[in-house]
Length: 120
Image (cartoon, rainbow, N blue to C red):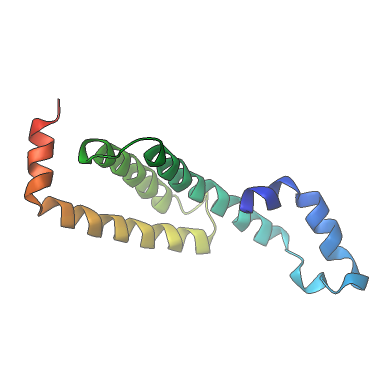
């Protein structure tokens, strides 16, 4: 949905600028459009991971490297206060906390240790 809104940004701006159709209250400011773009970029990472796992049967050996990749991206993005707006920065920080929670849980699983040792 966000991709579509960004693709048709000019049309959305034109429709929401018209007073006669009652949609003016939904007109986005420049800052709000920037937030939409930031949100799209961040969510694209998670969408790509989801689609990757839908293509095949995920195993611990394939999930962990993807989680590591997402962790690196979230950590870098959460620290970059200049690139992202405050709401996106806050969301990235919360996402990083949640991902760390999953890491803590996997570290305690015997199957995780076995999978990491047996993985080629």
